[in-house]
Figure 1 (cartoon, helix red, strand yellow):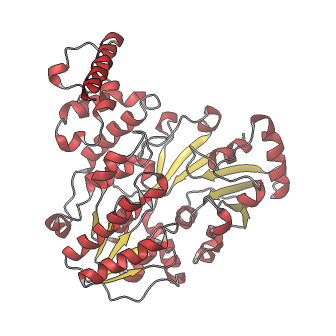
Figure 2 (cartoon, rainbow, N blue to C red):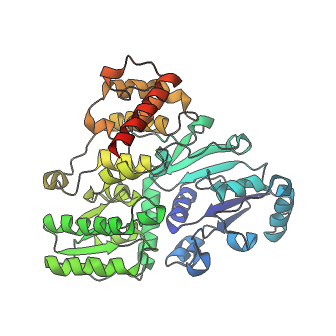
Figure 3 (cartoon, rainbow, N blue to C red):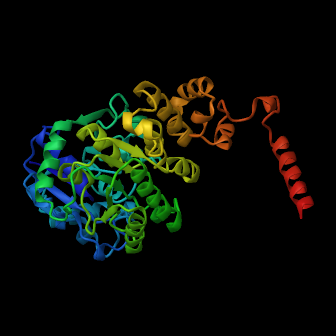
Amino acid sequence: MTTQLFLASTLYGTATLAAALDSGCFSPAGRRILVVTNNAAVPETTPSLDRQAGFERLRDRFDEVVSWNEAIAPFHPGGWSPRRDDVPLWERYLRLLWRLGDDDVELAVESIQVDPALGFCRIFPDAPVTVYADGLMSYGPTRTRIDPLVGTRIGRLLHLDLVPGLRPVLLTEFGVPARTVPADAFVKVLGELAGAATAVPEVPDGPALLLGQYLSALDILSPEEEEELHLRMVRGAVALGHRTVVFAPHPSAPPRWSRALEQEGERLGVTVTVLGAPVLAEVLYQRLRPALVAGCFSTGLLTASRLFGLPVARTGTDLLLRRLAPYENSNRVPVTIVDALLPDLADREAVREQRRGTDAEELGELVRAVAYAMQPKILAALRPQAERYLAAHRDARTLRYFRRRRLTSLALPGGVPPQLAFVPRTAAVRRVARRARALRRGRGR
């Protein structure tokens, strides 16, 4: 008998799996087990996805639901992976714990580059793997080099077609084919979740919905900068004429941000409602039917536009492009896509017309060039495409997606200024340049 194990950490990811199962993306199996993992910094204080409103609507797709946190306790899912010599012991233990016996096992995981997905796949070394992506990161490169013993077992990448015409770069170094989860199946599943939501406020039809992401927790912005970003969202929505604003904060965001937004609403003479409990953005789209969805680079912006036909706008992406560090930060491609594709909240005309910044073909070229600059060793085959794109697009708008130092280190067009192109890139020249900078700093003191 074949048993399929589905590892999931979010309600959104579980909804993606449910849509994939409903549309026949997985072959029949004797048993289907959902393995729930709570990756919060302190899992004991954060409800896991199987305790969230709406989960029961997804439960019937699986024969059983088990906890990864309980299976590996007291280890944390995000920081633990089995030692190589212990892998046979862990496989035997999980087969006993979940009554797998001698069943053939198939795995479906998200975020394959990191634990818990990576450790989960290592424990079942003979199992074929399906990777499902629940956001924009599927369009970017694999975050780190994956052990070939895992990478060569990945048979496909399931993803939502959030940007028509744009092909995922994730796992292409292993030749993994991408398959889309049908949008209508996903929307149907989201409709089931919307019917079970109880924390949606009663507000007038057509509010502006703002999506928070808690970027300071990722050390991308300071708490003060992120609070100001949220206030900019409110001001931008009001400037566009919206009198009712709903803010959906990240579940881990501090409560003081809510009060700051409410005070800003009072100052501007509008009603700002801050959600007190986590609700999927896609549920809010169906229950509130917002007149505008605004955010920084949330995947929810693309689901709002692509799946629900709602007007969208982005803000703060210019700051994020400068702040993301290191350059290979996995959020870079999502930020790039949203910045290049969606209208700026501050541009009234672009928001009203829902003017797109670029077409799918050019966006694909940009994404592949950025992906190569992020992971030149993993994606060495993309170098010729990156060179052609950068040689043809040396304007300021395009080059802001790259860093000159990065382009110079990779000897790509746009790196060294043309007037200095004759200088040879040698260790001796670099030593002289460093010495000159040191002398200049010394004179400044």
